[in-house]
Image 1 (cartoon, rainbow, N blue to C red):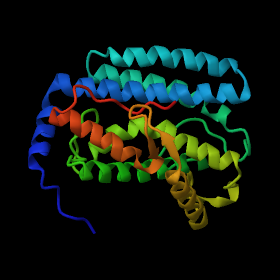
Image 2 (image 1 turned 180 degrees about the vertical axis):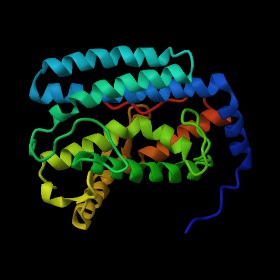
Image 3 (image 1 turned 180 degrees about the horizontal axis):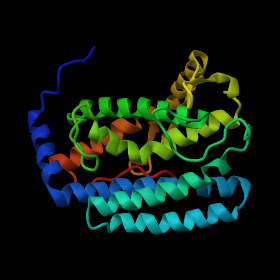
Length: 261
């Protein structure tokens, strides 16, 4: 079931113009990808505060700082995608360090999909999809078209703008969530089963556990780093959608991406 499209055609028209403007869309793309890399770095920094310094993490943190600055100065979207790829490679190369429990059962050697080849990727893919759809709903509620993006290329059926905003939240909302489930032993290796010769999928019970924990997580409150007000975590996509809509409408001079503290 899906409701009718937003009646605010004026905002959508401005969004289309914004997306077609190479400089404006590149500028927003730079901010989004720089914030993604900033949040990658923040995740690793938080781990070093909690568990002590690790040489591999310290090196990754320094490299991510450089890539974040590079992203803000990228000459075009092609260069920006290259920087994003380098940053992701550095981040995911050390992500297994953050798994402190059940290490032998949850090995991770990088992102893979279609189908996921390990339990960590199976969960990451699932929560990325959930959050992407929630962001798409938030964008529609703010009067924006989730299919007209700035960074992700336009394709039939692709919620490109939702995928753009998803980049800001991958580390903070998704990666941390999955690692927490593993470290708290809320899931185990028995919650997964083989699919075909290489793929791994979650069992129905695993999905229920994950979705229940996801709903609990969404009810937690934080102080929004820009608004300086208490916000439920589940409302963060809506807040960012509103901030982006204000920029597109010309009511704000800049879009402020989500940066975790």
